Image (tube, rainbow, N blue to C red):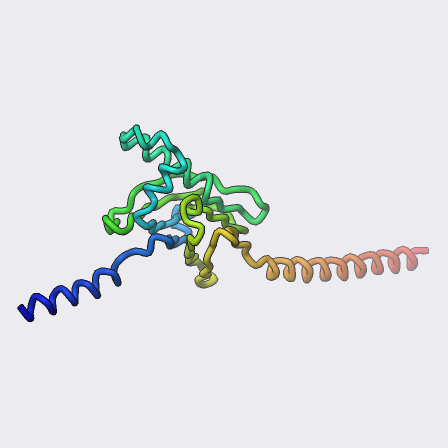
Length: 193
């Protein structure tokens, strides 16, 4: 009896620690060798509810292709990656991950065309959870970037200040070289006269 009581107490403590919070989704973003942007998304079990609210036809149509199409449209409309010029990168594909947990969470991998990322807008799951938090981790050559999008702040704009400083320095040097060139040209014309 004492063993059973200890066992049930242990299960009661450990099972909730392994459960996926229904108000959190996780996104791992990286560039692949094929010059694609790959997103590994870990959704809570409430993804089904979000899809039904997005497309009420799913209540009556249980075909897998219809659900897959709705999921793709849902992602395309709510997870937008813009390049550094503000143009959305093209959505290419989606597939369920072979490492999906089942029950509490489900994982999908989706791919976008490659481009320099300037901004990410992630409104996934916001249609059912006003407290939704989407955690992102971008792995790249310059190190990892981590951020969270929420209903109050669904966009993350990447720091463009380094590029601005670079372009400023290049412009200053170009201006100096142009002035030196014009000065040299003026001197050489004066010497010919």
